[in-house]
Length: 446
Image 1 (cartoon, rainbow, N blue to C red):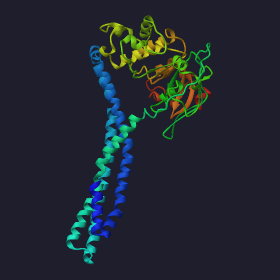
Image 2: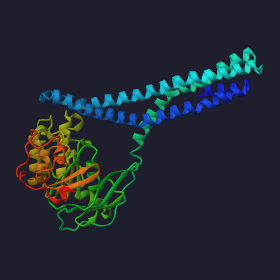
Image 3: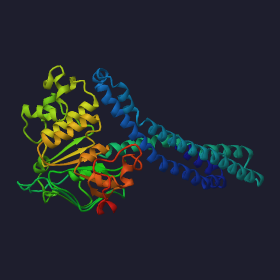
Image 4: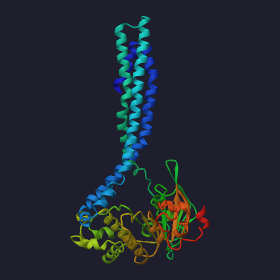
């Protein structure tokens, strides 16, 4: 910026009229750069997020390369890692379109601005106010001043840095949860209720759930398209975040009034990409709010379908995690085992079975019902088979709870089938058992 500003000052010293002409045209260049910075910010943020998604998947695959090679699943892992690549390419093209548009506009405005300064200088020369040497000087200074239009490339770098900084600062902006003094009633079974819950992000409502109730001991599948608010509902239900409005109750007690120990002992989580603790495999599974015996660790691993590959490790359950060649799916099973070992009244599985094949997923579901401590289960589901095995389905659309009903009842609705890309009835995927000739519930028609 020093060169354009200095040139404008020198231009004002030589001739105020030419300087005023150039100054009058600079807002148009500023408008172009401002529009570029505004439009490219969101594009850069989305591009960086997709880059991070690919990088995390690649890191998982590299850590479990030996297991992937032995299992012969290289093609599947490659497809999984590169799945977001088309999205990344589209986002990259959009970024370059914005960049090229800004350069093209500034490339037109800069010559026009120089031409206008030359015309004014020529008139001043004709009137005798400028000499030929001064005219050459003002033309050159005008060109240097208009060089501010070439700042689009530098501005793009600033925008990329700003978006990266915003992403890393997002964690710092998360406010600490304040815990209460109450505990759950001893006889409760895990009744979960959301009353008037509303979550707003960046001025936009991302979740609204009122009158949603999951009876104690039931399994509820959270279903919806990408961006419908499934993970937000899971986070609110387990009090990883507080809603902006409304209340979440477990066995009649508001979650924000529970002590920290009561909350984390009775509400458990399993994620798509669990963060492994240090130490051995057994220590990773045992880490949590409850004291877990070695036998309970093995039982939890068997329930999660992890016992087989853990026993094949160099030192079995005593293998250090850093030395265990595990794939992303195997890490996911260990995360499930840890959640099973510490299961309380409410267990939330946020996409925690996405890396499992259908058969293993079915075994995990059976274990949830038979081998794991009884309680309420909230499962973020992407497959119709998961929703079909659940007692209830919480169907989300654009952040709103569309219906709460059994999967078989909801399957009668074309909009619900479309969530699983099943299309209209008869499009190659049969409805679940008992779903035919059954009227949709009143709640599902809302």
